[in-house]
Length: 418
Image: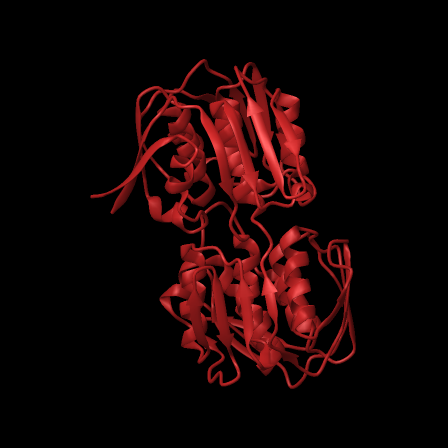
C-alpha cells in the first residue's frame, strides 16, 4: 500500500506541463481497435493506470500494442475475440467503450459491466437505446452486456439526457453503420470532439462534434492513422485550483485555454489573476480568496470532475459558498475527509453549503475516488502541519506523476510505500 505525505504551507511557483486527456484517451484506445487495416500511432497518451488497464484489455482481444514514453502503436488487424470479460474490465468505467467499438467493427460484442469511481448512478440505458436504434439486439445477462446485429443501419437518435459515454459509444458504432445517423442532445465535451477527430482520421465521416447534433455518414471500414490526444482539461483545472489555493504564481502549460474558461471565470470571480496564452494559463493569487457559488453542468459549464478540488479551495475562502452538483448525486464523500482537517459544511441532497474557515490542519485522510484524491492533496498543500493521503491508487487512475509535478512547483510531498 502507498500513501502521500504532505507538509503543508508552501506557496507554489513555477511551471507544470499537462498530460494528455484521460477522458479522451480511454475512449480513443477502444476506438483504435476499429481499424481493420493499418496501424494506429497515438501520441500524448497519459501515463495513468486507467490507460494501462485498457491496454491490457485490448491485448486480451488479440491486438498488438507497443509503448514508447507517451506514445502507443496499436495493431488490431488480427483481433480474434469480441469478448472483454476480465478483472480489468470490471474495474474501470471506460471499458464500456469497447461495446460500441466491437459492435461497429464485428457487429457483435460481449463486455462485462464496468466499474470505476463510486460517485453515483451511471446507467448504460442511453448506450443501449442508441445501439438498439441502429439495429442491434442488446441484453444484459450475468453482468455481461451482449450486443449483436446482422448489420447496423443509420437512424435518428435523441438522447433523453446529455451523456458523454453514450454519445461516444453510439458515435463509434454508427461510423460503420449503413446510411446516415443523426445524434441529437449529445454531449459537447472536448474529449467528445477529440474522439470524433480521431475516428475521422481513421476514415470516418463525422460532422457536428462539439455541437448538440452530430451527423455520421457510415463508411465501409476504418484504417490506421497517426493522432495526438488533446491536453487534459481536468488535470489543468486541478493545478489551476491548487495554485489559487496555495498562492504564488504557476504557469500551466500545454493546455487549450478555451477548454478552461468556466474554471478561469470562477477563479477570477474569487479574486485570482488569470493570464491566458496560446497554449498556457498563468494563475496568480495572494491572500485569501472570496467565496463563490458553483453549479456543475455539461460542457461548456463548470465540470463535475473539478467540483471536488474546487470544494477544497472554497473550504478556506472568505464567506459562504454553495455547490450544486447537478451531474452525480454521490460526489460529496470527500467532504467528510475534509471535515477531519477542519472544514465546515452542510450537505442537503445535491447541495453542499461550505463556510470558509481560516485554515485547515493536517490529518490522516483517504481518497474516496479519483477527483476526491486530488481534492485531498490540495487540502494537504494548504493545511497546517502534516497530511497523509491514503488510497493513492485511486489518484493514479487519472493523474500522471502527481507528486513529482507538485514537487516541481515547490510543494513538500512524497510517496511512501507501507
